[in-house]
Amino acid sequence: MPTTEPLPTAFMLAVCGALLALSVLFSRASGRFGIPVALLFLGVGMAAGSDGPGGIEFDNYAFAFRLGTVALVLILFDGGMNTPLSAIQAALKPAAALATVGVVATAALMGLAAHLLFNFSWVQALLLGAIVSSTDAAAVFSVLRGSGLHLKRRVGTTLELESGLNDPMAVILTTGLTRTLASGTPPGWDLLVEAVVEMVVGAGMGIALGWGARLLLKQLRLRVAGLYPVMTLALALLSFGLPTLLHGSGFLAVYIVGIALGNESIRYRSGLLRVHDALAWLSQVLMFLVLGLLVYPRNLVDVAWVGLGLGLFLAFVARPVAVALCLAPFRFPFGEILYTGWVGLRGAVPIILATFPVLAGTPGARDIFNVVFFIVVVNGLVPGATVPWVTRKLGLAANVPEPPQAVLEIASTQLLKGELSSFYIGHASAVAGERLADLPFPPGSAAMLLVRGQELLAPKGDTVFQPGDHVYVFGHAEDLPLLRLLFGQQEDE
Image 1 (tube, rainbow, N blue to C red):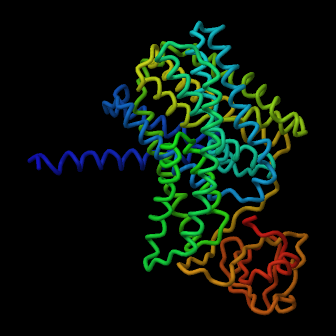
Image 2 (cartoon, rainbow, N blue to C red; image 1 turned 120 degrees about the vertical axis):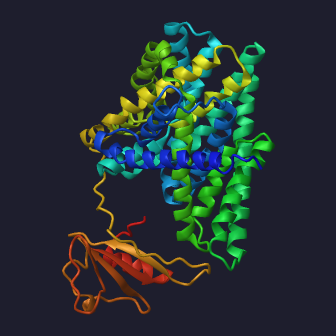
Image 3 (cartoon, helix red, strand yellow; image 1 turned 180 degrees about the horizontal axis):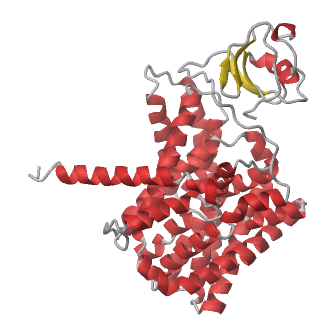
């Protein structure tokens, strides 16, 4: 061991801890200023880089690519686990159209603009378009949560599903066009065939692996609860790695496996959801910090006008036109089409994809990377800062009650008979103004906890339910229909 240790390691850990803490603290400004939290993480990374006060020298595109890939796997897996099947059934077709035809249309329009307006070669222009063609719904929802708004179910589900499904198509187009640019041969039908094969293999293996993962977790009995997240993490990594090795889309597969596990009654489910939510956030912070370190602000000056022009073209032309083409057959109202086209924010995926041509050593790769970075920042600021205002203006904010101040959960490593459900008491609720003792509760069911503002109450016979209350009720599966008649829709549905 070098005699200088452990000081270098301690210094590295201290720097990492400081950057993570600053990113979390600065994220509080996201809702206040309407800026996607990802841009704040990028800003911290840039400030810590060689051109900023931090002065950290970092130019390892291969490491950034590998870290970004792992982070995207964890983010997509977590997104799948939090996507209910009912939402998929309602929005799968329009989301699939946006994730395939919409991505291709966006890439083509951006490529056309880059070639005609800024003199990129055709292959470079199409590559740049493919890189920025996928969206990031997490950026949209982070801005909405910061402003206290919730989207109406159809629009929100379509945006969320699109973001989970469109990454594979963007990756396929980017890798194919990168090979084309490196070899100097024009793209042909083989690119389309490759895209279809990767999507089919990825979807098929995702379904198969998801089915196998559900069987495994239903049968698996571990004595230590902390090992269940280790197993689901292993399943997430396998779900990406195996399909990718077989020339399928690992990103699509891991998203499908996440959906399969998230919609199954598995042991320690609530704990798994919390762990993977934390892993997804950690991945997002680390990914944007490292990508921010990669950028040299002095190099952005040379591509400022190109990045600004293409960023505005993406926001005002390419994305809205692609969305209108995809959603028109599904008879979406004009306001929903306009909104979906406007708030298709870009996140980390385009910046990670921009490392592909750099690693391949293609001509002009560094310039493409800087332009893509500029486009992502512009896209996050121009539509991003207006998301809350546009949501209210178009009347697409859902009338959703504020979440309770406290959450009651059952975390068990066994599959128990019975479940805990939360209900919000509105003015129209059947139980509003009624005493608990007067309610016809099913046998074996009980009100466990009442959250009223800042108070936690233990419901008793003389407790009167008031509008604005959040109540947690224990019952069995066969009791849920009657409980829904009494209390209304469950809050987690």
